Image 1 (spheres, one colour):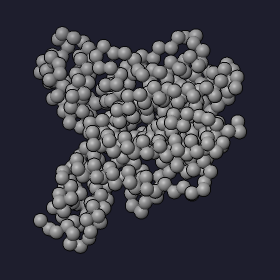
Image 2 (cartoon, chains in turn orange, brown; image 1 turned 180 degrees about the vertical axis):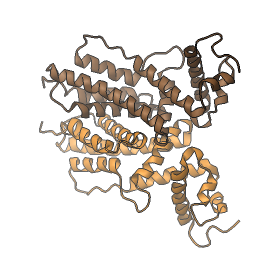
Image 3 (cartoon, one colour; image 1 turned 90 degrees about the vertical axis):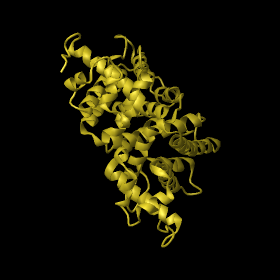
Image 4 (cartoon, one colour; image 1 turned 90 degrees about the horizontal axis):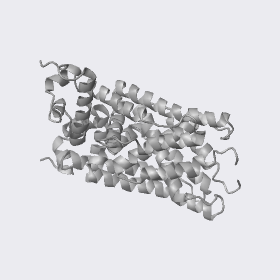
Length: 204
Length: 204
């Protein structure tokens, strides 16, 4: 077996494998994807992949964590933003995503949504998605609660609103990917404003 | 080849194949599903399946139409129901589904959502889902427009509201299936009432 630490660190190697996995998944789709497809997408040997990952399921679990980390790590909200500004920024981030050099938000979300549907048959993946769902919803609940405390928002059920917004975001992304409705995220953004957030102000 | 019209009509035979397909999909999942799996789920021979369907893709397209027909055909709304009652009935139907003798709403929706995710790679399936999405959203838009005309609802953007409600319903069902959140449909129903429908009344 070749030494996978020879030229780059284990972390770097895994990142190279993760990005190659993106390329291979984009090309083949999850169903037809085989571990050997990754080898064709990078300069590292197949042995290196098997050194780092114990089969397709292990690779996919790590890949899912990698996608979620990128998605979550990129939310930029100013420290002293008022609740509505923070809420808007979080919703926009989830709907329209951060920018990447290679493979944009939608290529990444396509993989995310495909694995999401499979999660019903995979306890490990389901747990990862469940945690992610909780954190996304939790971040919305937190800012809604802050808005209520600061007297900016009326006293709504913050948990229920977090759930509703997270569901709408997920559905709009899924609709853009599955049905090709390019404007689904923009429509969802308008609907959230018009029917949910505009009535959230404590002034009404 | 055996004569598929020998004992039952072509329509009946196809229904038998469709229900056997349900059982086979429930057991194997879409990815691992093969046409020969259906033969194990019914008394008809494999030749009959190939007589009626030209391969897995043709079978799946017919199956998807079958699932959608069942889903749509079963909405029961009284002719003279007021707009809010009709809207409630339509939302409940989509969220909680009709009753079936064998394979309940959730078994059927599980297949629906799995094929929905695949639709990005399949123009025929995408067109079927797109039509179905249009009809579901259209039925919501229609009742919202009627409510506005009759002075029961305030003058909202009915198209946008139809989209929002259809998205929330889809996401809640998907979350129940993928993440096992059994109460997702009930939560969505509460959130729709509290944040969307209660402010729809023209009296406010």
